[in-house]
Length: 137
Image (cartoon, rainbow, N blue to C red; front, side, top):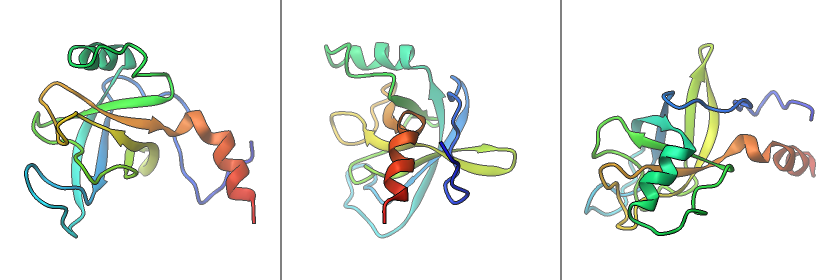
């Protein structure tokens, strides 16, 4: 796969314990979506831990696959919310911000539930597809 200099992505697996940032225009707890970009620091957790946490509220062990990355707010009450789907999860490497995930889903109630991580599509799982589709006119 040829690298696109306009598309920075961490290709190696993000490690449990890394810190990232999520941004989005989604709603805040019990509020409407606002035209204000919000930002939150999140801790990346292993898929194994994520699966355990999600299984505590949803009886579906297949919910957390290898093609996702999970993160939870460093502040227990801050994470993604309704309206944040498709927004980026980034980590900093060598002074540059790299896209590692795209917001997919969070808690069933719409905003964070303490202890339940948000789930992001893992960009590194789709690099070949992205490269092929970015090359199309």
